[in-house]
Length: 420
Image (tube, rainbow, N blue to C red):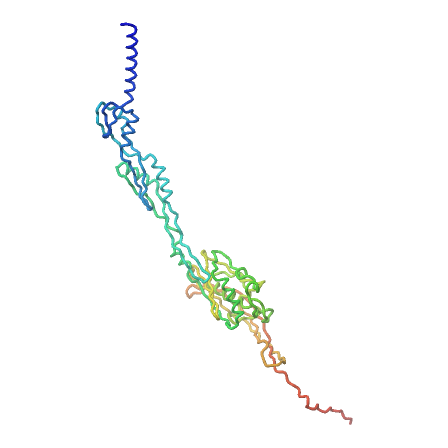
């Protein structure tokens, strides 16, 4: 054999080895897997071709908001089949679904499906009306239970599972709010509706108080709520009690509003922290049950309950009524008035004028006490001093018609002393 032939055979041998090596990286001729012909393809091409011909595998998670689907992967033996196949073999792969991102996907779904509960709410109007918005239950997801159920379903060949959830109850329901907005107490006083300026002042003060919501432990101030009694603040001139006299003053009549409110607050079980009497007794409540307010005197009380108290005012042509709402504590509260002494007014003072009239009505002086009585049913639980007061005496003044002197009537003769 010549040297040239030996070289040629060597090259052919090398090429044969090279071809054999490439042949080891390809699927043998005529091979199919799952009905997909892959003969002659590289292993990677063959695996991809077999898998792409499969229908997409999905897994559904059923939630309260609807169905959420996930595309799954396959765990199979295709790689081993394409490498070990012999010529013209028709093979069937063994595969099972595989959810690679199950933990991440379900954690995200649980977070998305969770719902915080919504408490019922109450709205209180200036007119003393209640409106309620209903509560809504929340929802929380049991991630571990859902994951376990999903993996078990995949293993059993099922393609879906329900999201494991449980309801979360709201803290406050409409039923609870209605129980906390029951009537605690109501108190009414009457006035002369014909005195329009005084009636206006009473109404204005009540309008500014009505709709007040006193939170648990909260404090109320009449002066802060109603504002200064000035013309700029909407008040008119009517009689006020000043240093034992009834005199015109801006805001006259608001003390009837404060007095009515105080008695309602006491009956509702609120704790009065500041109240003062008038210098004169008033006709619309018993002694030591009034509440005088001024620039220097306020009516204050506190809410001792664990829930809000709602204050409503109702004004009629000749009456004012306050009502308090909240959660009753099962007790009844009342002020008991006791007059301990009376001082009769001095004889009325007579003055002359153009006509007969009463300039100032007389008024007896009063010493009085009031007691806060607490009942449970008909049983008196306690009786404590609420206030001890003195109301001034007022001397009446009556004007009589001045007597006219007749100029034509002769004067009586002078009397001259006689000597013995």
